[in-house]
Amino acid sequence: MVCYGGFIGKLPGGDISFKKGNFSFHFPIMTSIIISIILTLIFTIIGRLK
Image (cartoon, rainbow, N blue to C red; front, side, top):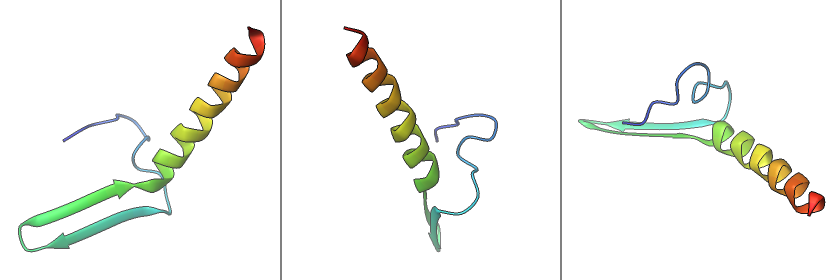
């Protein structure tokens, strides 16, 4: 299990959870989108500085 700490991974709206019997699957889609946007901005800024 991966723990992101704090509020990351517990953002409202957009998390996909599935539980059946002893199997559970959780995918934090909103967290993934936000991390993707932040990384895109960082790499864009770094790319323009070169």
